[in-house]
Length: 489
Image 1 (spheres, rainbow, N blue to C red):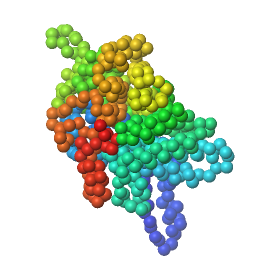
Image 2 (image 1 turned 120 degrees about the horizontal axis):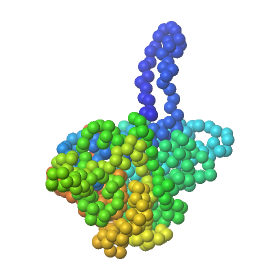
Image 3 (image 1 turned 60 degrees about the horizontal axis):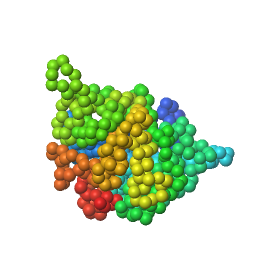
Image 4 (image 1 turned 135 degrees about the horizontal axis):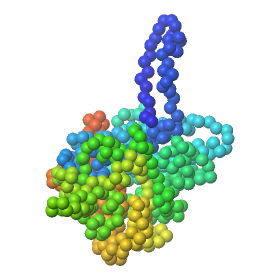
């Protein structure tokens, strides 16, 4: 479902030009791509980028320390220059996702309808694009900090866009999201089957949009408490995701090229590049976490011939690790149809737990939302109600007895629940400074610590140099250890 790009060759002939033009039409290739097609393509590109474990495009499951590499440990040691990983992510979001959403919006806006229901559906379609624009820009800001924004997609005006202040972008994203929410009308349709995330269900998009608003509000809590409280309470009152049935996902198909990227990287490739880490295996073992059986495989740890002793064993993060000696990602994750989750019930509940600790009015206590997040995660992966009850009774899990500050308690369980969503897990660590992540053998960060941002693409340094240098100075240095504006603690 890739967008088709054309190179137009112009031939000028003294005669028969019209006949020659007709002869050179490719009747098998469309000359105009519909807005709906571009919208669907952008959704697919977005989901693939989020789901992938390919180190050329996505290192989040590694940096969150859910997995580590077996032989080539560059990315686990925070080398993102060798494969120009920031360049790949930057290009994917701007060229394949945001650009397609922009073009889709232009084409859909140009469509003319007379029937009231079609006019209403058009308004919903444009609002949904705007929600996904906000989602995508939010991801870019949380990845890099200051980014091209106001001039980013206006290629007619400039090919060297300026970088905008990250905090200012957040402010504008809140405004854009509020406007989109106001435009969404659940009594009318939108894309139907062309929407591969929510099937055109506008009510689901409202839940998604308000959940995104809640997420952004929690992100800025330590930077701007007043805005955080206002936006979080508005989002909760309007209605956020409150059931796993309301998760926003892309369910992949069983045949290429529409399988989950995890299947391509873990199974179809025939490669054995990743094993679990002790960072996550050890605490899950200690807490008797029922999700271990869904997250990872067991390995034989016996030392006697003919005796089998299966256990979950994690490798030391960032060191070479024999594939057969450690647990691997589980069969559920390797299924070609396994879904990519863009927003989930458990993610929302942990945000609400944080909000409750900050005395926001979000309909429950921190403990209630914390428990609800754990329950949603265990049931989503295949656990039972009995599993939930037993797990919540563990002394290291129960909110009243788990060690640490509220930030540490919530961070640990949110991080575990975000197992297949590495960027969320890594961002939880950045925001709450928990859980403790291990230092690899040869870290490439400037001070040897865990990275807290991507450095800017190398191409930006060469092709957009003056704006790159201005942005690097504005954020406090283009380093992996430079904190984002919301990371003030």
